[in-house]
Image (cartoon, rainbow over all chains, first blue to last red; front, side, top):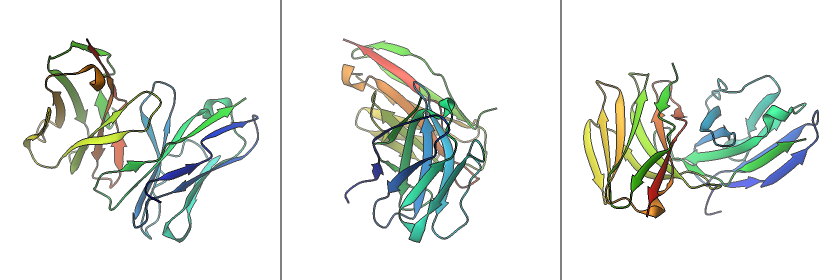
Length: 113
Length: 110
């Protein structure tokens, strides 16, 4: 595709359920980021994938959060046993390398009720 | 200390004025610096990047970098109401990842 694609665009889930968010980066981009943005707040770094290197998971807020990137392309962010404080917009971004412009998807708005 | 700090604002300027947005960062090994603009309900989009000390100009925008002071700024000349948005400073750190500041909300009054 022409840009970074995220799905679903909106997700409402019940507290305690697991959710999976998907990111399809721009073809050829080796770097992929996940960020979280709560209402009116800045971007909170979650996890970073660069090529075949081990991901930087230092931003994941708890062990309920995990992410993988298959074949160096599509990434999924999984949140287990969702809590209300997980409600936010989850943004995925990709870039050609580790030091270049990041292109963002439109985000997944997650609401935990 | 946060890795990337910005004044959350809001910063309000009249139309036609210069808007000055500031950002400081903690990692002296940081290599690249980006300014993104985010309209309400939209995703961030890049407006400027700067790698070297000094000024970089692009149209009405000027990015300024001072690595010794660990400071980067964005100047918007002849501000327009359409410039009203949140401006996010992003830093590619020595830890090899891009960290964003919390953003500064800018309002340009017509």
